[in-house]
Length: 104
Image (cartoon, rainbow, N blue to C red; front, side, top):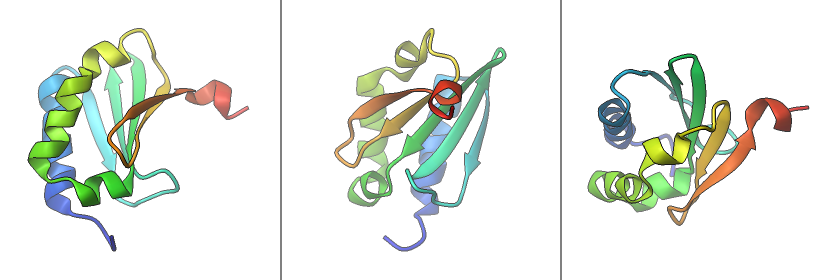
């Protein structure tokens, strides 16, 4: 996939806004090593959701949000502040651990 599909990025952003209405959400539009990055700041808790480029390329917007609903992101994030969660190419979501501890 060259570049990215803005409609899919917007769909993920909208989904996150609906799931986390009290959070400030930002998206890094550039692709990095892991994928596209979404950052959520919720009551002084920071979460990073990184979505693999292949996952976005291989799924339409409906499939993407359906996968996120299966994982119940608010429950997945609960109690895991400062963690990075990675959506792999096959749609599995991996808790990549505390971003500050893993960067030491």
